[in-house]
Image (cartoon, rainbow, N blue to C red; front, side, top):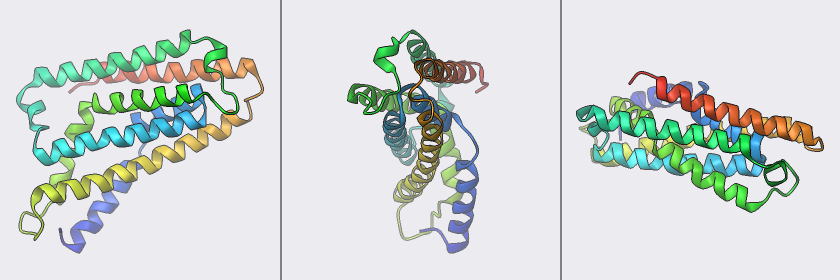
Length: 210
């Protein structure tokens, strides 16, 4: 593995990146606002699992394709952006009785949030580029462990640290909506706010420069 000094720098830099508000944090919070805390937690778990796709891709060097084929990068980015916008619009159109924030939220909503979040994370080429650009800075080619294994270990640590922050955001959002749970008007407001966040994220991703 890399030297102790390199690992200290790795953990410090990862912590800084993890606590900077980003799309994953906003997405998990939006799911919590729209569907409840359990759905927010399953969404955070889905994002976490989706992150391993990028870890494996970085270890295999697949992310280089985004640099070699810019059209592929743009296509994946737009697909992810459109998917986020579609999810946000679906929350706006959702019927209050189906998506209301109520005690014991329906498992169907949690499962939906889980699979949607995996797709959102996998369709985020920025994550792939981040892993491919960030991890090599802390890989030691002369270490006893092979480079691909160092990618996997370091990528897993990054993914865990980022997901821990997503979970914190879910609980913070859950604490807010917990006080509004009995108001049907507040439930509709939270659902629409969550939808607005998702649409905003989608537009931001679509317009963001490569």
